[in-house]
Image (cartoon, rainbow, N blue to C red; front, side, top):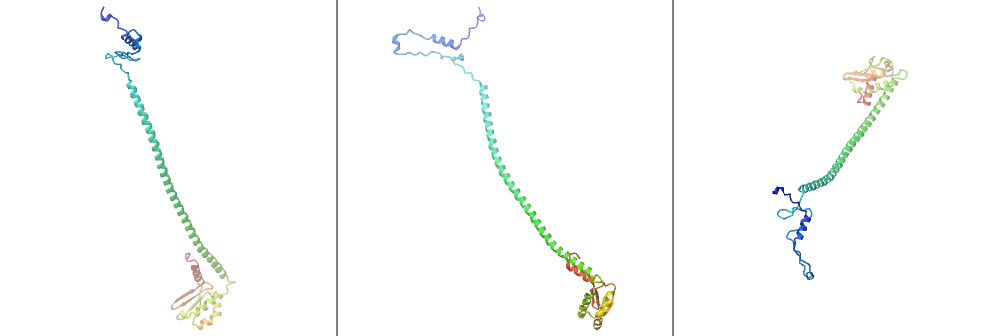
Length: 253
């Protein structure tokens, strides 16, 4: 029978091989004297643990899963990276939050100061404008009151039953007293409605001083005008009224 026809011997377990090694030891019958000196015999071959296989060189081979070690290493690296990333994010968030808080407070203070300055300037301008308005109103009120008084006086003087010509006579007497101001023979012009009254009251005085009395329809009643070599003096009512209005409200005329 060839070697190929012989069946392969069954593979023995570690327990069976250990049992064969123990049985192969040089056992001796036990005697009472053997209790005094113990004798230990070391087997030539080491015992095998459960699950170990005997190598050709007689040494056990440890089965180590390299993939499992690599997986454990990767997991540890990932876990460490994740923990470091989380810690870095927390630190960065805390630092960024504090920095943003300080920047926001500073910006808020600056904006508040700017708004306060703008508001203060606005109120100052309003107060200034209000004061200027009050000042202008004071002058306007005074001017308007003066114009109203002059207008009322003009209407009263212009009424024929009330006007007695005394104002015109007083004005002519003042002009005669200022005779040195006029050279030559001055001419006194009055409205035709006032001519007779002036001639009756002041005719003799005018003739004595060399004045000539003339009637002029262009002069309003109640006024007069003196003409001399060195110039004219307009004392007409219209001219005097215009001068009073100019003095009362210089900006309006």
